[in-house]
Image 1 (cartoon, rainbow, N blue to C red):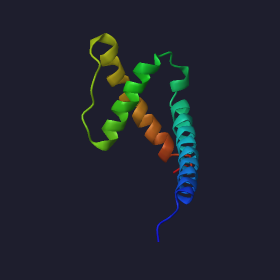
Image 2: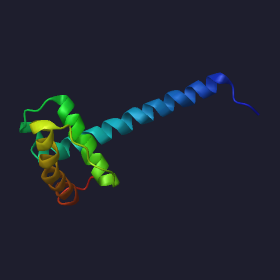
Image 3: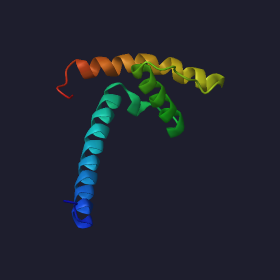
Image 4: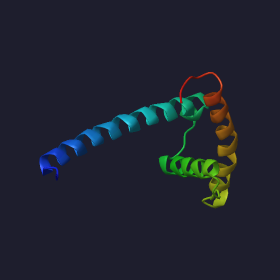
Length: 98
């Protein structure tokens, strides 16, 4: 028997709420780790920080890390590696977050 569209809409709404809760939980976890690593004290453009996080994600997924070029671009790639190690150590170290 096929589901009526109203039930499908209800299921979609429930899934969207679950997604919102999961994204909030993940964002809070990443934010806590970033603060522990000292990223809260760094004055950096949001776009540069986004690129650094994308490079970090690629690094842990086994992909190539890109640089934006220039003096700042090279610094982003170099400075994100120690932060990644600190963040990974902090996550594995004293917290029970998973």
